[in-house]
Every structure is written in C-alpha cells, then in structure tokens.
Length: 204
Length: 107
Image (cartoon, rainbow over all chains, first blue to last red; front, side, top):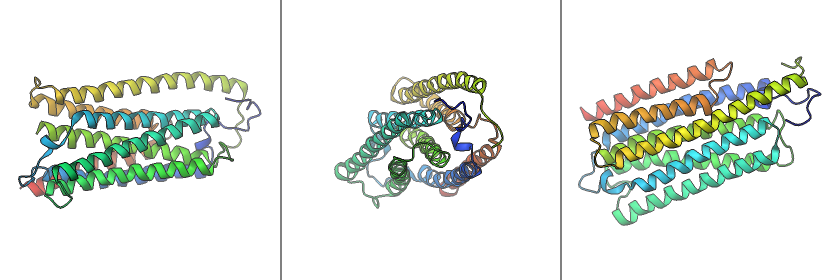
C-alpha cells in the first residue's frame, strides 16, 4: 500500500462507494440467471448426446490432451484476473494492468484453441451444426460459453483502455472487480463443460 | 463508511492479512490444478472402472466449483449473504433444470 496514511484511499476501493456495492450485487444477480441459462443448455446436451445418427460421437471426436490444455489455460487466466484484483487493492496500477493484459492473452489463446477444435470437427469429421442432435446441442452449449469468453475479453480490453489515464479510483475499481467476478464465473462454467461434456462423453 | 479514517496501525494489520490471503490464493490455485489433472487422469487411464470414474469426476467438479466461488469470488468475505443466496439458488435451480430436461427427453 502506498503512502495513504492520510486516510484518502480505502483498502477496498471496489466496495468503498454505494454504487460499487450495488454493482457487485447486481452482477451476482446476473450470474444467478446465467447459471440457469447454462443449466438449460447443459441439460439439453446431456439428454441428446447419444443421438449421433451414425456420425462420429464424443468418443471418437474428443481429444483429452487438447481439452486439458484449454482447461489449464482458462484456469490460469482466472488466477491472473484474481492477481489483477489483488494488485488493484494495493493500488499498484502498472501491475494490475499487466495481470489483466495477461488475462486477455490467455483468454484469446483459449478462444483460438476452441475455434480450431470446431474447425477440426467440421472439416475432418463433417460434423456440422445440423448433422445430428448431439452436434446441435454441443455447438450451442460450447458456442454460448465461447461467446461469454469473447464478451469478457472485449469487456476488460475496453476497461483497460478507458482507465489508462484515470488509474485506480473508487470509480474504476468496481468495474475491474466486476470483470474478475464474471471471469471466475466463466471458468466455473468451463469446469462443468469439461467434466460433463468432454470427460463424461469420453467415459460414455 | 466515509467517517472512518485509516491509521498506520490499520494499514499494518491490513498488509498482514493481505499476505495470509495471498498465500491462500496460491494454495487454492495449485489445489485446483492438481484436482483438474486428477480428473483428466482418471478418465484417460484404462485401468480405472467407469463406475468409479463418473462419481469421482463429479465430486472433483463440485470441489472446483466451491473453491472458485468461495475463495476466488470472495464469498468468504464479510457481508456476502445476498451473493451467496443468489449463487446457491442459481445452482439449485440449475440441478433441477438439468434433471428435468434429461428426464423429459429420455422418457
């Protein structure tokens, strides 16, 4: 913490204002509703994943090493966004920016791998969106998760650019804090995607 | 909230608890990496029967959920009753939704 013995900078800038606290509560409200969206897509996929109509199913399609790599990248990006918040609470703006840019980089590599995986499925296995019920529900679920990752990246890049000259204030801090909560949530969803879709698909 | 001034003493206390907290984050992160790896190994290994693998990976997923939500999303902080309520009601509805959809389509 820098020389803030004057009592100007509160230790938790994200919760120092009523606006900040309300925003955090609002994001939790959003997360609760987003959980239900993903639950619907997940339930649909779990029920329909056997309907492959002779096309390659989960056991032939999924490569575990590949999914493991994606999982570790997203898990690490969750950690870097947390370290960004920790730097923010110590008012180390440069460090915070570095951690969040690292998060962006990891998020982009995750997205790249996901797009490449879809490309493989479509080109080499001929598994289009309309091939069978398994493919439709799989692409919808994974596509929604990928859209969340994309949105998160756009969100934090916007914040980083906007706050460049403002630094860490009680106005900018809640914004970054909200992003990190959202990003952890996206990672939580991925935990269930890799467990229920990939691993359980592989086990059969 | 505005009336409270932060003294040097508060600042020292704060930085000590920061250190403890930071260690907790790193330990959690390593634990999450290990659990995730275990989950993949359990599925990749041919020797482990699937009757064991499925409950095992589901249990790991649940532990990862709790670690991520409670430690990384700071639900162990003070004054987080509403977020906790939101999250766990969301989780509860999620389980009902998944169970319902699976039953509806299978039967």
